Image (cartoon, rainbow, N blue to C red; front, side, top):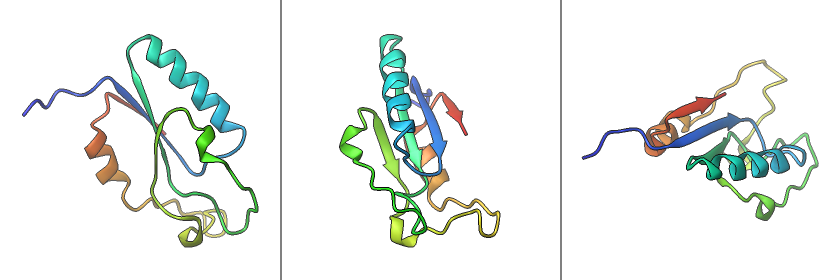
Length: 100
């Protein structure tokens, strides 16, 4: 088994926002030109307290959503950020760099 790290950069963020998707699309394009793959891990689809509807078809980058919106609580209520499944996903991707 080849255990070398892939030329992948993982970005971990809370939820997909309308203003982040164009940023990640541009970053993906620029990294691809250098032979690096971008993968974004979203902790959740969104928060129940937010009414935003994000069209994930606009995401032109590899991504994972760890939890569905209906199962996510806003971390602002208790100040705790806990992303179940994050470590497993990072191990699966085996990135060269992680940006949090």
